[in-house]
Image (cartoon, rainbow, N blue to C red; front, side, top):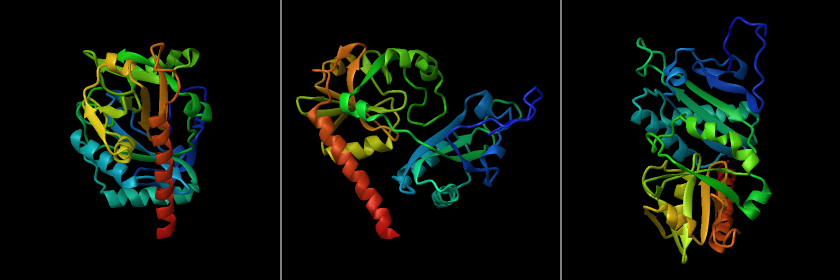
Length: 297
């Protein structure tokens, strides 16, 4: 995506690193270098936009129907006029996968708020769909677990996947030097989620996950189904520090063990049995999902 401006860069296009050659913008498949957004789009100047991200394995978008349903629902909840139905979005995604020869990676969908007369209210909006490379967490993180830092915060409109990540992006400046994966949001002593993941805990063999002030993740939904019995409820910050196991779930992490929060070890500081069992079950679920695509084709 680029914008023309007067400076010494002489119209040289920005290198977008992991972005693939072709994208969907301006109501058609075009070169990703030609994608552009109006500088007064409320998605840019007000942060009023939605997005979603779908992982691609063996040229197939995993759990596509769930992601598209959530994307459409997010647009409706923000009163953004997304004039595409699920079938149309699916066709665009498959066309982009083929055009970019995307065997593994991700699809990023963005729908901006558009350009309005008052530069504040949402208007027509613009749809962008990009193909990207994707690096999953290292094997060491799955084997040893990761650290989280707590932050008192509730995401605005938490059930909608908006592009508003201002706080965690600001906080992330020190994550690398502190060897921290992400944050754990809490408010009034009750936890909710991480900035890009859902949170689960295990205590005395019972799996629990927050019910309110969260994004209802597709991976979260699949893990709940795999686990069989999961309590969706309020979880206190003190309670999760004293859990037997903690793990996080997301599209780009699958199931990732959490072994430390704010410097406090979760039990013995190693991934637990329930977490490891769910990690294996989730891997098998993905294999079945991929096999089903091959059988259909």
